Length: 168
Image (tube, rainbow, N blue to C red; front, side, top):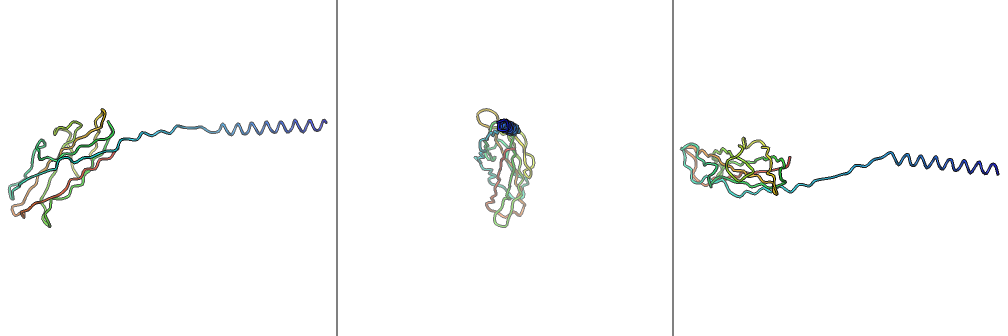
């Protein structure tokens, strides 16, 4: 019986060592919480076209003021107080093979007024911040000048100004 007791004690000892090893392995990990804050989608609305109306050959640059009802206007909504980047694609004003020189400028702000921060060059992205409050808002006013040459072909010239806004 003495041998059977030794075997039983040895088996219990091995079982305890195995249990401790399993417990030690279970303590070699940790967990982290995973979270995500999904922003509202950005909405860009072109709600007023940029309209030069009648322009005259050989008269130099012709355009309008920012507060003019002919100024182009975009309204942007998204996550309140979020940083965004605005970028532009501007197609030339054209009528068939003829083009009309176009120069653009504009402003942006979080209140719907023409006065605001200058957009700078339409060839590069502009950083901005949406307004705080219930809805993040940004308003963009676009104006410019056209310069018809003295021998500019008559006709209706058209082009586009495309604004793309992304979160930063």
